[in-house]
Length: 102
Image 1 (cartoon, helix red, strand yellow):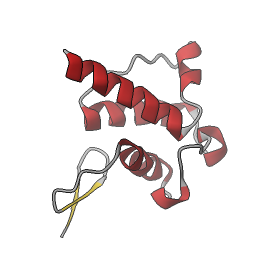
Image 2 (cartoon, rainbow, N blue to C red; image 1 turned 90 degrees about the vertical axis):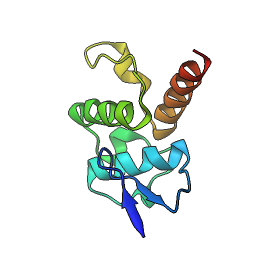
Image 3 (cartoon, rainbow, N blue to C red; image 1 turned 90 degrees about the horizontal axis):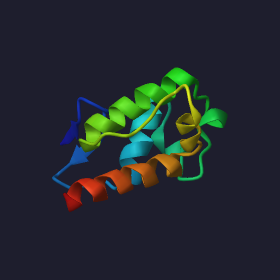
Image 4 (cartoon, rainbow, N blue to C red; image 1 turned 45 degrees about the horizontal axis):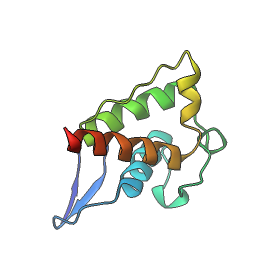
């Protein structure tokens, strides 16, 4: 039975935990209306079709999915921190690690 997370549309099956990369690919795929299998860690978001609003919406979805807060301001250099899917994954993993250490 396939269960979808209402926040990101991420698939959850039989209690198997998806990796951070797989969850981010699901979020990006949903944002762009594309198959998450098209993406990997090196996928450039702009080349994939992202616009500035897509990045903001993705940050919100990621924050909800992982219950974290990502320092992000679309109007300054922090927006450039998310060029690739791998950049998002590293940011999420760092924030999750900080949260786990508290």
